[in-house]
Length: 579
Image (tube, rainbow, N blue to C red; front, side):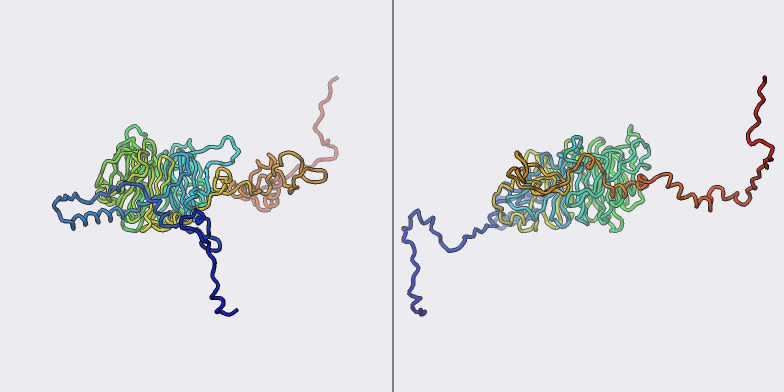
């Protein structure tokens, strides 16, 4: 067939009227139709439904009704620049907890988010695995859950959970318990610090906290050091590689009347110093004191102390230090936010009123922005307050959970996103698609996953394991028997014959790990050793080189015994019997 003949062929098209309903069923092209997701519209649906963010201007500008249009345009541009400066235009909502969220933290790279709650669990979220329709945690961890079947399992509220700022491989987990824990980024326990002896009066002689720990934080540059603040009036610095004793113990002696020298430490922060040499350690106490130490020691006495920095017997839960180490901001239970200078640590530079929620939620915090140009904190009304770091005046007030207290906030430096935790168990990630990077922006840019039965974690997911438990056969575990009938075989039922798996008896469950015992319990190897053989193996060494009688070896007299004659009886003289 020539090329000229092929040009004469025409493809017949259905002759349908323009208003014919059948046109909806006629394909417009051949092959599988691809459905593309409109990413711009999807991100636009994440825009926060707020009337207008309350962007407060730096000064009170009086507008005249007769002013020209140029001045009005300038004012509008200033307000727009002020609102676009903070990443609060869009939000991503995570509902993974059952009670109030008390702690939020992102790893240094910004790929993993952990949240702690009053329900005693830590939820781990991975941004790379989430889509707009699958916003859930890939693992739920209870730090004090030893066995799922144990009826006496304790659960403690999460006070603080924070990733190490220099290493995202582990995080510090502080609960309402005297023992803090270091956990991996996957939720496994790496280190559990020891508990101190509660019967010792001198806290310098204890190896750990003897009371509940309120909070903790990491060293700004050393990934192996962290500090915890407890109700036993101490700050304890720990080395993550040594769980048997703290590295340093700082005993704070309260000067309040009737306190007997003790008080509860409520908050602590460890930041860089103003000179860039030694870091600074600042802590707050329940008696209203604010105390500052040199971050690298010595810790025998504080470098500065302020008595009644806040009202005594009120919980000062929020404290943070600026990036240059010069300014410290505190949020007390007396309804005041105060700004302090570490170089003149005597009187507050500025103080403003701000309603406190520490009476209900002691974990309420206040944070500096990554560049220290702003200060963010929540409020009892559910609003996010962005304050000026110089005069503590609000630059932006925007509602997050109206009517519900906003407990914790955080601002990640790389993602440029603000994470908030509220009393209604919601975690919200605020972002701006133009100024924020990865994180929530990456999640909202993915195509939504199709609905499937596996998307319901209550049916197919084991939250403690992070994967489907029904599809995994643990080596050594018992295989469930099928309902009704016998297993397959000669004359058996219709079921298939499964592998013979060793059943775990109660005796095997109670056997501890021998490797764990040999590494953590001193002299554990002597448990299976015969004590008689253990002593006799030193008999030859004791005869050749005696330890205790070596000094008299040369001067010891020769032992002499009397010779026994043949007529003498070997035994004692027998008494004559009287007749």
